[in-house]
Amino acid sequence: MTLLLSLSLSLSLSACLSAATVVTADTATTSGAGDDTGSTAGGSDAGGTGSGTTGSQPVDADDDGWSVDDGDCNDADPNINPGVVDGCDGVDSDCDGETDEDAVNDDATEPNDPGAYTLGDLSTDPELQALASLHNDDDLDRFRFNLDDSGWSLFTLNVSVSNIPSTASYRVTLEHLDLGIVYMDDVGSGTLSTTVDDTAWQDDSGTWELTVSSEGGADCASDYLVTVALD
Image 1 (cartoon, rainbow, N blue to C red):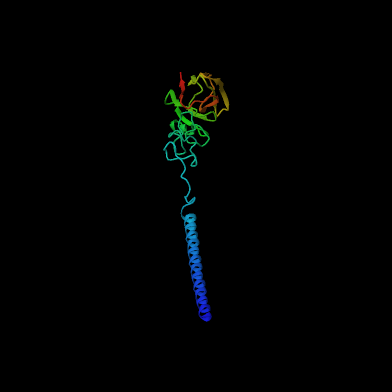
Image 2 (tube, rainbow, N blue to C red):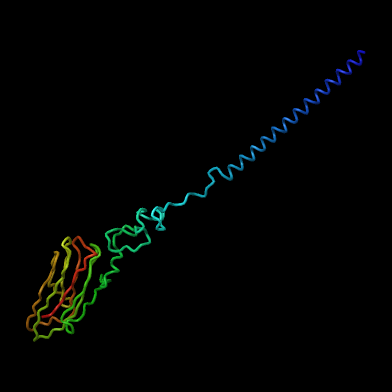
């Protein structure tokens, strides 16, 4: 009897221990699976989403194809960006730090600095004219013309630069290049002119040069008129 009771208790205790072992194993396995799943999900989030963008695109507010990052200095105006021609409008339209530098392309006498624009020969045409402009205060325009003179002929040479803007001050000089004589050096607006009277037995043949420069207020939108004429 005692032996049977002892055997029964031993069998019961062994069964309980086996059950506990199974439960503990299941719990560990479940916990491990949970950890693995969590680890995998965490890795997926870090690699796939998180801050996972390739970088924001630069904003082009005025839809002109140029952003501020591209050099657009006024992203509210589609007519201002590094790709436009900077014509005569008083605005740095191409964002390069200069204003109206491409206005020079609208002047038919350019380039006339440092090389001069040839007006013509007064021996074949007694009046020569040209329309030009100073596209900024650093611009210098040069005009040359030829004159034949005999010792026994007399002439009167009239030279003028008109239509100079009233808000500007231009300098006009006239020089006989071959003789090295300066006949005019005036500063002002409106019209600047001079008259050169020939004297008997003096040969004034050769190349003459007229220069126009700015003392301030150059306006690329205002053409001035050069007139050289013989009387």
